[in-house]
Length: 378
Image (cartoon, rainbow, N blue to C red; front, top):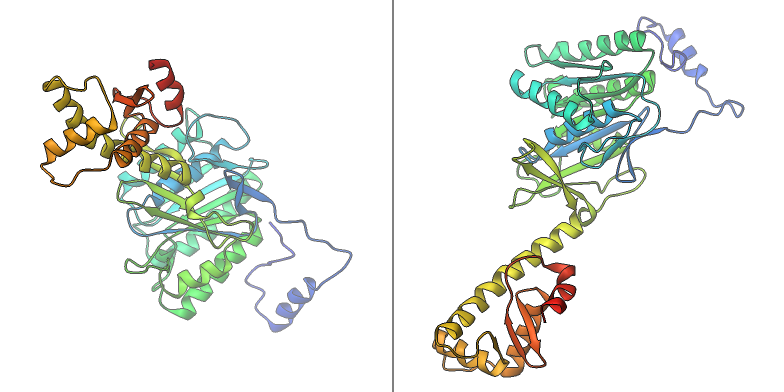
């Protein structure tokens, strides 16, 4: 820890206060070390020593899954593992304490989160560097004191602190809407980052009705201003959560380039699903395939049943069958139907038999493999 930077709080006199300030005065010969990046997602820095990182999102969007991934990456440290940390990795030396304080979950959920972090780390047992506490049973006024005491004890025991996780920082104050209390809390926690030269991750809820990602009260506003990185988590209607950040000190992560994860029953936890752009494209493609099959299967089933234009048909034949099935008086133009058939071919729903006829393709591999697949079927 930097004893020159922050001395004992017992130095209360104005003389001591001014002396401490002068000890930090600019000196061209004393160059502070650059901020050391210690956590990344992909190749984007999300934490550095001496700084705050905010993890934010509305209720039940997957914040706890991200915390378990961060804990897993911290425990893994410099060692390689294929275990799933949602593309989050630790950078640099990993010899110090990892401190996790949970103020929100039940003892059972807290215990399960820490166990999942061990699974994500790729190790067979919890790291001896990790110390985790459930603080639900402690008063709000006691939790900051516990944080200070644990950081002091672990720094002395391990030699240094690698990272701290406050899973529910709003529970360290009486009210996140009290401006004075919020400013003091953020200032104190930020000072601890510098004193122990470690990143502190905070987990904070967004207001339920906010469309602008507004975190709770003055506490959230001050944390967002001070943070090295503001990591956002959103969840879509399909149950897929996206990690991204648009207020980052080093480099933003646009939502359409974010990191997506979702629940995996076989693994019993959330797992990485892909980058947002590719995943959303795959979802759009899957929807297009479903809609194309819904349109074409009745047409070819009718053709087979009536023993006409099967197994392949021209656009004109498809027009006639569609009209017969739908009962529409107005015909689809053959050129329009041809374009539909060509589109269905690119989706892998139809396959081309010759220059002007198409047949139904079996459900299966699609996307970028279709052209190769279709050519082998001709």
